[in-house]
Amino acid sequence: MSDLWLERPGPGRTTRPELDRPTWIAYVQLAFWAWFLYAFGATQALLRDEQGTVRAVAALHGTTLAVGGMIGAVATAKVVVRWGRGVGMRLAAVGAAASVLIYTWPGAPPAVSMTGAALAGFFGTFLLITINAFLLDYQGQAGPSSLTQANALASLAGLLGPLAIGLGAATVLGWRWGMWVVVIALVLVEVWRGRKVAVFGTRGLAVHESEGGPFRAPVYWTLAAVTCFIGAEFCLTFWGADLLRERCGFGPAAAAASLASVTGGMLIGRLVGSRLAQRLPTERLLRASIVFALGAFVLAWSFTLWPVVLLGLLLTGIGIGIHWPLGVARTVRASGGMTDRASAAASISASVAIAIAPFALGVLADAAGVHTAFLLVPLLLVTALVILVLRPVPDVAAAPSPR
Image (cartoon, rainbow, N blue to C red; front, side, top):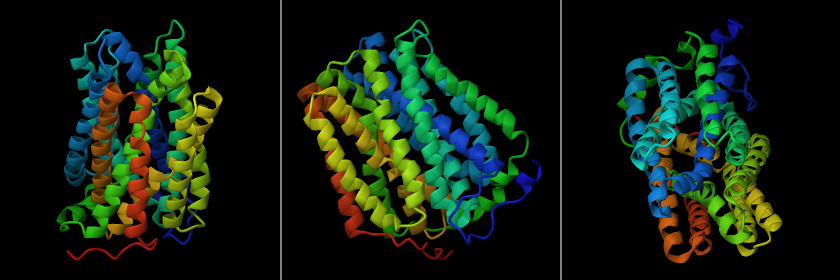
């Protein structure tokens, strides 16, 4: 296996990702971060029941997660420039494991669980940025396909996470065991990685990015689209359980487990999307996926019969599954070669969306009901579609910005 650390994929004549050991390590780390992130949404109603808070207060867990993510996105560039991407990935993984333990501390008051959420956002975003940048750099022309493939595996983990939370909530295990799986997994992956972190990026790979000027205007439009994509996704994953409880009469455990319909759909969408991204222009693929997701969400929102609602959520997940990976790839393409900075900027946009959109939906739900508040989801998707139509990004990467 040692030679797998020394060779990277060729110069990019193919869009088929190279599945070597460093790539698999990145995939697995991303998958268990996704396990936490989607299980986090499933824990919100359960934690709210334990702590006896209203939805607006419970939604602050998502806000602190996102604020930590924004700080982490800013800090990532500095750490990567100073110590290298590989070292940064290790620090982020260890920090994320410790943060999950704080968030899930039994009997913790909201201040402690929010602190854990903030730290998880910080280290998790750090990990996400470095993984995205590594895969896009390491895989060359196969980067977008590799990133979509990695996010397909992440969706599988995101499917299992809510199921584990729901199973725990319905048994003597308790819901927390589903989160502690993440802690064990992140530690084991670092053992698997061993001491060889240079292949994931040394200091020299990132220094040139700190010397660039501001992004060009197209990058900011791609970031606006990413914000809409992530806002819609996390409204569904944070509050979907409440929608099922209100509209379908599900109990807490069943509603938490049923969020797997969204993440299961995202898994299907990313598996199919990783193939389609090798053959179709990504702009066309993204526009079609938004239209599909809008139609599917109308199905989920309009009915109270639980099989129809779950089918609608599954189809919505299929539609939104490729939005994050291809949205990040769009931002990197528009950036003119500033991979780490563009990945960090996309993560900041995602954190802004996670901070604002689910909190706004929670406040609206307290005032007007969950069903009405969920109209925020199609509003975000339509806004993203308008941006894509008016501000397209060519599939061919832009030339590097002058330095």
